[in-house]
Image (tube, rainbow, N blue to C red):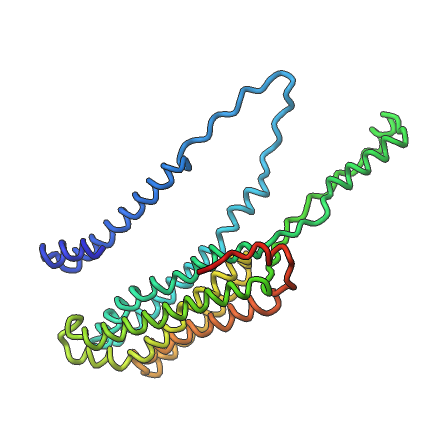
Length: 331
């Protein structure tokens, strides 16, 4: 993306169209690289056709339609969360654009720096999803099939005749309940504490980076004094946003490791509704660009509080020796 900006914007003078082309081409390059990795691992090769059935083979079982529907619906929380995030940023951008002039231009510059810093903070979610699933386990309910097998054995022992079995057929066993995911928060806490320390270090670095770019490098970002003044005024709120963004994303990764998709969707519902209400208040109150970035601070702080309450509160279970032995070493 940076290379495309340098060539298309700086050298060829395509302006904003060059920046758009650079972004689009960088996304296509990323897709091609990822497809290459999947191809080398054999994940894009078609599955071999099944062997032809023999005469003695039984009819193939019916496809588990309910399981397929559940698998598809499992992606709904992720789509919903992404929709809330995108809507949040778009609403903030629209509110800043409605201010016009220097505030709108300053918000564009601030977001360019913020997106660069957000990328580093997002590492926390990846680390949480890499190290914390070792502390999750699935609790399977007593299988109904075993009970049905025992019932069939006892019925066969009764010596029921085929006629009696035909007149009084056995009831089909109920479907097995889905396994429940439990998470050993007490055993995971040392690892999670190291993740939060790592996230805090990253947040400190990105806050320093943003402050440097928006003060010492402000003249390279904009030549308009009014725009630079707006950026300097918003810098403390931007620093507060960046200092809490990494923690929020790391705690979001905790919920993903716990497979608490319902909690994730409920949290972002509350976050999205509250931010939309606050942005409407910013428009009416005339709080300006400071109000917009105040909503960003609220957006990050509320996620930290709700994710921490959900992940550390009622979902924390007692430690188990198995999870403690499976604790991965970090750092």
